[in-house]
Image 1 (cartoon, one colour):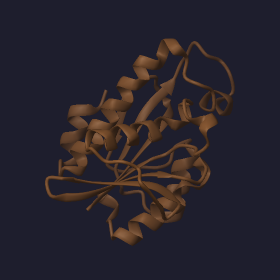
Image 2 (image 1 turned 135 degrees about the vertical axis):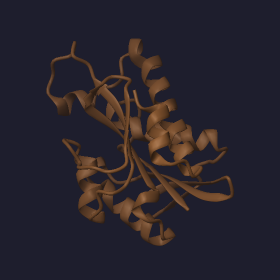
Image 3 (image 1 turned 120 degrees about the vertical axis):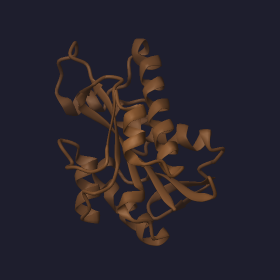
Image 4 (image 1 turned 90 degrees about the vertical axis):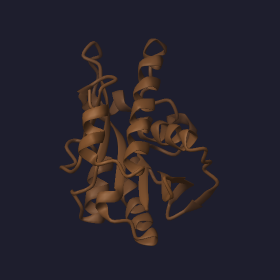
Length: 187
């Protein structure tokens, strides 16, 4: 059993913002697996699929970003998913736009959604798939930047990055060793 969680904000007005990269990538992963977000449970919108005979839950918390950990904790408990089988996908301002960085564990860094996940679960030993969003040409406060809409000229770059993040999540959920997934998709 695997759990893929894409972090974001649930309202339509946030749909195309940088802070919703995790939601977009989770949607891409569900699409690649032929799954639909059909039900709500554990404070998340959920899709179910199978990869190599293994059940995969793909989730988008319906809480706001800063409370994402509640959904992760509840889903992991309900489905008895150990931390090393939980992949969290999210935007990362510390990485250049369009870059993907996968790690098997770590801290929350500057990301409030990840602070919530770690705070609620007590885990640091779960894989995370980070999508870089930093644009050195833009000089506005981080909170304004992450909640702003992706510019049209960058849409293709971010669509590709979310697609690669989704591919990495699907490879991981297919039983791929996190080190192999990192080697293939980091960068």
